[in-house]
Amino acid sequence: MPVIIYRRSESHDAQAVFDLTCRSVSELSPAFYSSEVVETWMRGRNAQTYRNDCGDHAITIAEVDNVAAGFSHGVPGEVVRLFVDVAYTGLGIGAELMRRALRDALPSGSGTVRIDATLNAVAFYQKWGFAKVGQSVFPGRGPELPAIDVVVLERSFDALPD
Ligand SMILES: CC(C)(COP(=O)(O)OP(=O)(O)OC[C@H]1O[C@@H](n2cnc3c(N)ncnc32)[C@H](O)[C@@H]1OP(=O)(O)O)[C@@H](O)C(=O)NCCC(=O)NCCS
Image 1 (cartoon, rainbow, N blue to C red):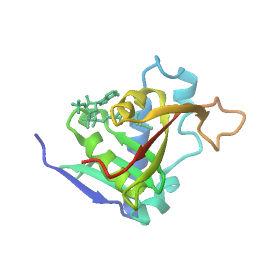
Image 2 (cartoon, rainbow, N blue to C red):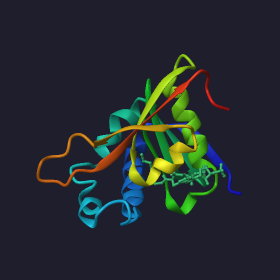
Image 3 (cartoon, rainbow, N blue to C red):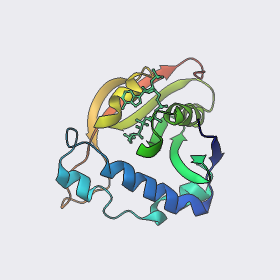
Image 4 (tube, protein in one colour):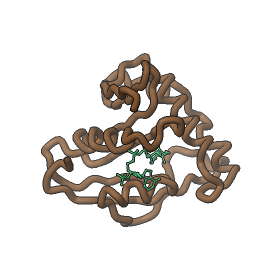
């Protein structure tokens, strides 16, 4: 089992966060999204897109041997992002990143958390007790790009999970 370090992001992590997102998207199964959606997923995004959140220490980075293996981002009421590089899946990194994102999503320790989940990740979040409350698409994409369908999930917490 490799040593996994979890730490808050710095501004210089923006490129790694962008690269991890690109890799995760490229691994998406055609069972969930068309090739047209996968190929255009990251259009208009670059490292700069993640610079402010990284500089604000808002993202949690999981590192193995000084290499970013995954990251998560929670804001009050929402888990915004969670990705684990396919090379490091199955090691518990996703679960620990989820716990940390939930701490940021639940600053008072209780409340309702929303996730706009990509279709492939719905089962992962259902294991955490999240349930489907609707469907949506990722915002901010121009009409020339195919919509990215997401499932809106929610769960109420009385306390932070272990
Ligand atoms: C989904 C994802 C976060 C899981 O990360 P991971 O590091 O492999 O997860 P873990 O090793 O911590 O697994 C924790 C548990 O979740 C389960 N799990 C992992 N991926 C799962 C999936 N896609 N569906 C259902 N369960 C899943 C594991 O079997 C494990 O179960 P256990 O506790 O009963 O043993 C990761 O595969 C990923 O980033 N995928 C692509 C990006 C993505 O879809 N992100 C979400 C965007 S909204």
